[in-house]
Amino acid sequence: MRHQPMIQIERLDDLHFRVTVNGPSQTTHHQVAVRHEYHNQLVGEQVTPHNLVEAAFKFLLRKEPNTSILHGFDLAEVERFFPEFPQEIKDYL
Image (cartoon, rainbow, N blue to C red; front, side):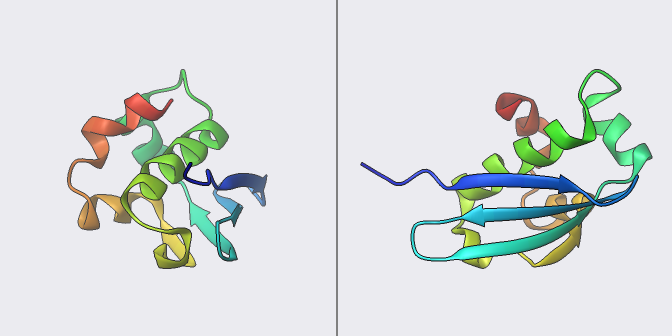
């Protein structure tokens, strides 16, 4: 059975989150910025930024190991690497 990484999210301020992922081989730490405009564009007001970050990491962890996820990024950058992100993010909420 494949190990499911544990995701912990801490809100740093209105824009930034610290995400800790306890992966199968290593724990990684990431800082993610979620701009209000992008948040609304993706999911609207019905989803909290915290839940959006959690869903984004579930999406990313289906694509790559936690050790391959950037240590600091703006959530909008995910689309650059995974163009399907805006369409698929709702599946992870």
